[in-house]
Image 1 (cartoon, rainbow, N blue to C red):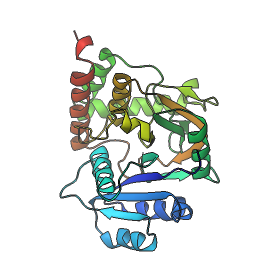
Image 2: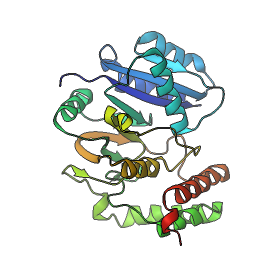
Image 3: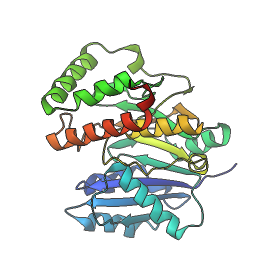
Length: 280
């Protein structure tokens, strides 16, 4: 019970102004307490911006790997750096984007309350996409199968295919909002939560969960979801915690050929690792 020690793992990739703004405006009021930030700098034009943030708040640390580690790779590196200086894991680890606005007046206080009252290993808040005008959690309620994974892999096999699929998805989302994209008001157990804001209870790691995702980018939600199933972990959606997601402020809706390649590699890995027995 009581206050929880909470670690935010942020990733910078030539987006240091947004990272610094998120740290100051969204988390600044919490940084004299039990909230800490580790920023993994995958690449920056103005590293001084991040240094100034760390100088302003003693609970902010910037770490620099030898190369760009991707999203979860960088988060895992940040967590490893935290554990070098600390004897134990924090009560909660949050891996999130920095194009995020915390809507709760006291987000950390409300998170503490949820953690004291509810059992979970992985949690996703209500995430509202200001671009798509819909709620991104619960991300996937029921487990997908090998056939859908093969479809995802096929779509990501070609930049043109992916662009056409994305365009159709955007049109469908704008014109025909389904009930699953409306706000879900009740907490529920779910298969996967959206990767833009993932809350990991200490129990996730104590029971074998990891952030060491072998793929460079994309598919992190499915990786965590499949690990959760394998380890018997509890993944939940919690509507009392609310964030806005200013989606794709850095990555863009239509991905580059390089990004589509990473996406295809991730789907190939996930299909081979977790869905091989179904892929007949």
